[in-house]
Length: 152
Image (cartoon, rainbow, N blue to C red; front, top):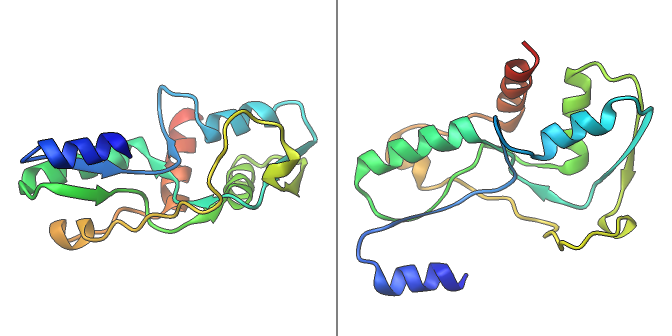
């Protein structure tokens, strides 16, 4: 947040973009980790108490370019539309790959991690959608697109 504040204080023209739960080609992310975890396992636990808006890097890059073309500087939230818990996202992903194991709900407190994650980080891409005349696609559609791109 300090970086954002410094940008606002010292920058006259800027695009400040916030996003969430980014996934895509060439990086390790929740989708690729889940696929690795599912290999050879018949049971997975995924948290139900973290909710956000998954964002495909392809869509984020395209939306960023469209935003730049407007010349309308400022702070924007860019993420795929809709929201889900990590559990709901995992359930969707595992159904797409026809995984035959059992997905179990868990809480963040059930896992010992060094990183504290927010429970609710859903973002709304307003005013981007009104500025460019379109919404970003839904997270289900883009997750399916990503899975198809890595399983071809």
